[in-house]
Image 1 (cartoon, rainbow, N blue to C red):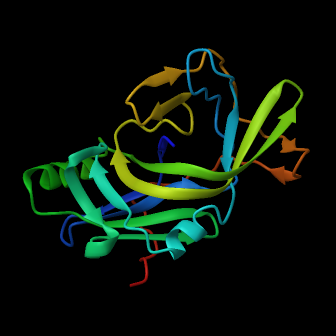
Image 2: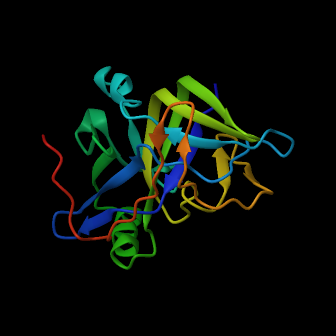
Length: 207
């Protein structure tokens, strides 16, 4: 099963003294723009359900963080206590203890300058629900295996209509769809796009 990558542009904070990057890597109940997994594949929208990461986190899986998904530039991992990941009511939060390396220092500078403004999370879908609303297909991720959370300069989940797959190919949707403010009738849950002020400070992840 391929790892699917989704990205979001919000809520990234840096502490250059403590050498930490903290932020929200995924939001619950937010409907994406149009996605398709191949040039000829169906177009759909996606949302992450609250609790989707819980099982994966409870198993103690060694989730990792890389700079721009490059496995040669590891930023942290659960087993080394250099990466902390927790699920909260509104999404998935991470804290990275950035290594004192050339690429680590470059990353801190890039986040501090706001050249890097988002997080990307990689997952394998375990359980999903699919809904239709008119001609629109909606996929709700109910349970996923979390593999990776990484800072990225190319957030894609909340507006660029891209889907990055594990083979490195990027397919762009040919549909231009506006953010939904309607309630999906199938599961009666209002989808909202949420905006937050970056660098205003985020609650510390518990040890």
